[in-house]
Image 1 (cartoon, rainbow, N blue to C red):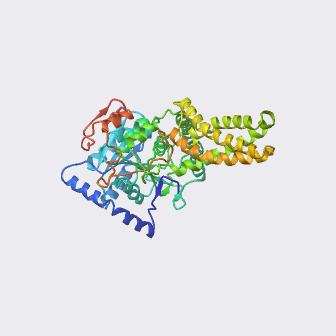
Image 2: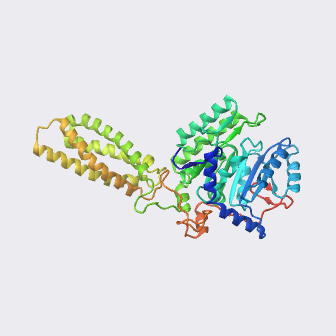
Image 3: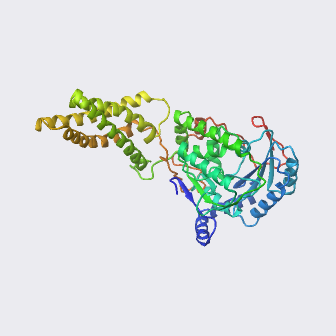
Length: 488
């Protein structure tokens, strides 16, 4: 299991016990939602979006099956939203017929194709607490729906995804799709340092408040939308919950694998470049979320930073040794120590800036290097002082003795360097440096300990302009959105 992710297995006796225990945490929320619904507030806890394009053949059976499942004991109030992506067959008419005959169904029509575009249009306007989507073919066993959304309703997690790549998942699909899926997720791990296991499974959910903060940062409107959403969430330190699923491939899938793969690779390149150049406002996003250390006095991400700092330190030490051995016969011990330490200090600061502390782009890079050189001065003082003491005690000490003394002195300087660099990058949040903290009074996670600032200011940090979201809109109440070309 990867850091920052949690897993809940939806099947088996042990898993059932885990679900029962977990649901004790959310039953109060479910009761409150039911009471609210009875009182006339029609906003559901869950809004399930089904994006469709030319699905006239299977849409009716899918929606009826899902509606029957939700009415058969599902503990949270739920709505089904059919998002029609510019279908050219009878899909839209069938969707409206379903909405007219089933009170828990509504329809949104978009003039453009794209799963991400459909999800954005519905999620931005939804009044539900938790937003989810699933593929129209219902390839994923619906018994995984409750384990998917329960951690979000309770506030324990921010996003939840179904995974077909867990060892306990049961998947039926051809070898070509299996290989492509695994290769794509390996690319994400290598290029974007992703920790989630399955980016493209069409079975996901997200807390509405989290969605409203992430959506303005997502550029893609097609299949890469899922990956971009998950990478941004992970980089912001949000908690991603994973549910191993039972999944049967749809042989009638209309996904163009080659075209999708090409666009996904372009999306990976774009996102990696945005992260490396600092184009994404990740610091503002982390600040808007409002996290704080779990243990007072223990900085967030300390363990991960120590490991990454140690890896950079090993490389710097090897480079220092090589430079010293090359320069010492030419320049002498003190000059060789100064030059080797200076060169490795500049490289060390740059490496720790990007790798250890996750600071990207050119903003304040010169300031960080200058502050890093101040830390370097302490290391120079320690090592030069050690050399001076050695030469006073043993003037003819061989070069390897000098090197041993310098490495020992550098160990002392390294500890000071880590503390110093944490000060230099004190305003930078690295990957995995934030964790969720909820106030006990809000099980849905709507209040954060760091969210005391004006909510409108928090939204302005991300450039997000909130849409008016009233009670649930039915399919026969038209509404248009000029930006997306969507209509209810």
